[in-house]
Amino acid sequence: MVSFGESFYECSCTMHRTLNSPGYVPFVGTVTGLVRIVTAVAGVAFSALAAVLSLPFNFESAKYFTVSIVVHFLNIARGIIELVPVVGGLICFLIDMIWSAINVALNVALIPVKAVI
Image (cartoon, rainbow, N blue to C red; front, side, top):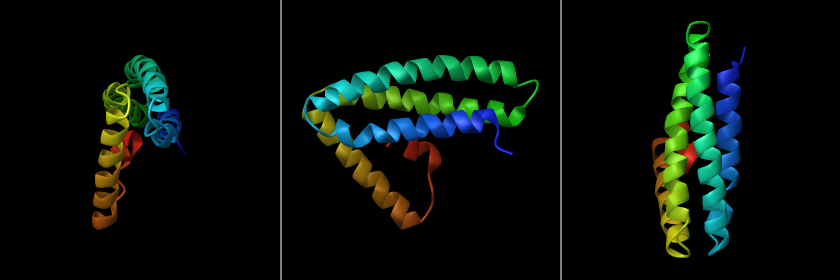
């Protein structure tokens, strides 16, 4: 059975991955960067509260909320990079290409990293 923490984590990852491609476009990336920062800050707050509240009852959910906090902080960093027109999109594109090559080379799903990149 999928825990609420796991569902929240997957939904959050999907939303942030959707913002990746528009983030490469100059000036559109500035808007997606701002959206990414706002949603990631809200995600950190929600995940921290949910992890603390679910820990005594459901360790599996608490684990996903904890990983989600780390991923949201990485999304905040990416959003800050995306705020810089042209250069931010180029940096994010290069990071995505490097991580994609690593994923293919290792043939491993780097789930926390994929969520950000």
